[in-house]
Length: 411
Image (cartoon, rainbow, N blue to C red; front, side, top):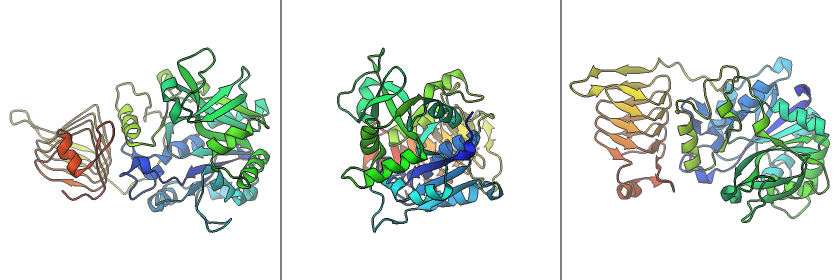
């Protein structure tokens, strides 16, 4: 297996995250809570940490305070051993401009690459949900003697317009790349699917620097998909790594190839709901490949109180994730994800919902298919998720009908 000590991970965490608003009104997309206990960025950081890639630069930009705090307080590796997870704010090193695209973000920070002098550079996004042993991608890249390797997965042909679509030959070499095409070429042997880029790349350092500098001097979108990939395969060896062949310790067969780009509210909601299935497609309980995160302030264990069956005052949770510090006090939750320190009061009923830290649900409240952001107090008797027109007057509603109550909302 190729040595990870010769690698550097550049993690792109500077996107504005408009499609995930209002959850991104006050925080960067990678800092949005996920699975109750984690942040979205913990997924990619944990993959690298578990894989032994322990030099990580996180490029931030928009509304990055909570993300920077999360990284500085929780992601501390051994500096004595040359290990780090470092947030790098947009520095405008090449002029008075913010990042013009993902490729430009790397260009503006090429000094980080030259300072660390790795042989290989991972360029990964910070807002995807998946498990991956990146050492296997590195082994594939080295064996293929590739200039660049792109991680990919099959997706239904009907979804092709949402992805960068790859055409590869029988040896796994990219021969065409189309960014979000309206008419895509299906996979060889499978007319119902296309091969989609995950937006995760591995470069030899020389190739990365060459392509990024070339792109910076051209009139392009300065984006890895639309600019680099569409051209690089014509002049260099770009190979395709299939996530489905990646073997992660402790992972069930049903989880193989799981990947979600949680770039919009409905996908984000669905990915959270994936966690609570009896046999989840993405399990949080794999002790051989754990998901790491920043420790919270000390919180008591979750508590469920009252068992007054006659008075229908029972604190219960079914098919749900409940974090530390939560109190389900005579209320009911079903198919929910609760972040720390949520309180569910008597006779309330919460179903198919995601509640962020510090939410308080008053007595007799009824909530369904709702995401409630941090520190919202739901008054007694409130109903959300049952009357679309009433909800639309008060809150944001996603295309799939998920109601979102923004952070700090006063009801």
